[in-house]
Length: 375
Picture 1 (cartoon, rainbow, N blue to C red):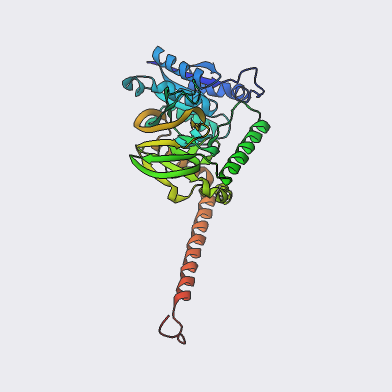
Picture 2: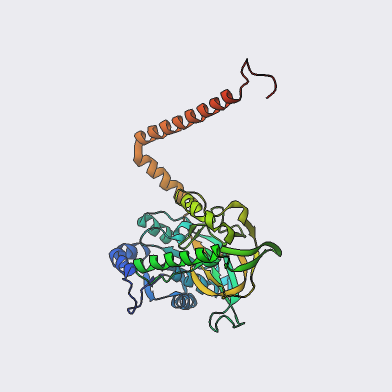
């Protein structure tokens, strides 16, 4: 295979209103990226379809390392392009993700650091781990909601459906994007409160776990989903299972409080509405508008849908354990003894707080001499 790194760079079409944010960042960091990943070739793509075809053609031509730079749509195309390869060919590949700005859901799922220099070092090292990939089979959107033709797509992060899972065009300007998100949330809340939320039957490994109206349904391979944040904190992208979470429409009023908890580092979904499985079946109930299902934030079709996990099938570039230990040791050495002393002080204060809390509990439950024998 060729040792040249292929870069799939997202470039928005000229007819859209969006500013070329990713190309501008690329021009700013082009020399640094070229020095770290040289030799490389650049292919500009404008969506998931172009990214999928470019990734598949490059793999056939002999490229073994392909890195996606851009939004979740381009990375979704790269994953599906790699999944079109034969299993033996795919396992020799090295699939990487690079975000030039803040860490996105892909970088958080893979566990890449925040510093761009460290991300480039990890991509250059090329250490890979086989990650799970989910496969969705649903009704094709090509022939409309009444078409019975099925389509199959793959995802790395997760699949989502329900009124709150509406995917928004990544080509919108930020004000327009926020307006569409707010409008979708208001519409979904009104439908749920009015009792007109879509109803589904959810089966996990052949057992029905929920039947009724819902506001959101997620089948997660990773912990983070585009736009929704960390929706599956316990998910492991390499454990061979999928995490399933859903929000019944009856609990829409509690979503506001859970949203505040999410910003504070908590969980937005209630614990009873979670389970794990290998094959998930989602069937719409009753009449109504067709329900869209999205994979990695990209709409792919309509319900009903069957979601399966393909364990340990996609080699993703990650940070090696040895490199992570070396980086932490270097950072600790640079901080010096003062930071070490501060860490000891923090640990001492934490232990003191725990001890005081335990003493307070003992005093609270200790029976006083004047108290009666019975409580």
